[in-house]
Amino acid sequence: MSSVTIADVEAAADRTGATDIVQRTPVERSRSLSERCGADVRLKMEHLQRTGSFKTRGAYNAISLAVAGAASDEDAGDVSEIDRVVAASAGNHAQGVALAAADAGIDATIVMPESAPAAKIEATRGYDAEVVLRGSVFSKAMSHARTLVDEPGVRFVHAFDDPDVVAGQGTLGLEVLDQVPAVDTVLVPVGGGGLAGGVATAVKARSPETRVVGVQTAGASTLSESLRAGELVTREEPDTIADGIATGGLSELTFGLLREHLDDVANAILLLLERAKQLIEGAGATAAAALLDDDVVDDLDLAGETVVPLLCGGNIDVTTLKEVVTHALVDRNQLIELSVRIDDTPGTMGEISTLIGAERANIRTVRHERSRPDLPVGDADLVFEVETNGPAHVDRVLKSVRDAGYEVEWTTQEG
Image (cartoon, rainbow, N blue to C red; front, side, top):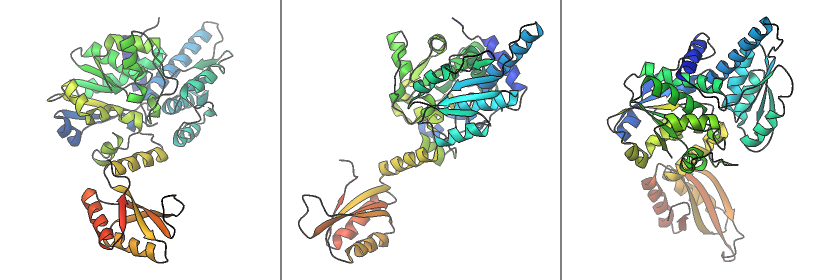
């Protein structure tokens, strides 16, 4: 079985370092995360790549090697010119392949699941790639993509089950060691394992004492399940908003690399946006999100360490961002629902709206409920969606409405 060595990663670093397609991304200290977990947290800002993701590294390495190899074969008398690449992707690999193919002057066909974020689909098309939407999940898109590699001159560029891609991703690990030589722990998201496998290979070869910890979401924890089982475990439909790691499983290549080099596995978007001022997508935020889990921080014993979470993607879909922010506002009691029982007479909604507004709370929506079976004839419930500053503000709003003689229930309050 093919594998990846530090020599492969170093050669990929020479290759990617010679092009402006792959950027050297900065590292910045996060005071908020450092204070939260008692460590010196340095964020590797890989989401600032030209395509918004680390995927450009692996795609560029694989495609440039394929084109160079084809040229060598042709010089030797074999006609094996590469004129098209095919890939399957949930989004970020698609853009990396499309950009690298455009730079090499060859065509690209990318198969994406129908559930892929619209922003990633349009960005991929923006690099002149042909985009084919097929299936509801990544595995369906992958199956279709493989049927398109049916003629000479076509190279399939797998998102993670490709040594050249994994070696390219590993250049990120070399870059971290160069920028933060004293790093104790690197936190890396795990989907198909291409990034984690490459980074772990590079880091452990250059700095054996540095820990490399893979991070997955609970709904896509195929790595920890595979390690426990001693064999590959897959999920047909991973349950996570982090579409970039919703691959459904590892490959034999990446599982072998992770089993050999990875030190541990740990099972955040909003905090990064609010405190670090970085807009990161679900998959890209996974590593930093681990630092928001007190159990993970305690289990890894990160106190006093220098820790580098890899922020791997910034291509968040606006609809997903809205869902994340809304969920967080509800959790913080900054977006609540109030149900007020009223006599269904003209002017009542305006009166209650005035009471809520007087407390400087913002009404997003309001609706009448008149057909519930428990409502007496002539009564109705007014249901308000209200923005507040938190629990104390909610209490003031409730008191104001109750003092006016209305029965009001805070319907989104836990418990």
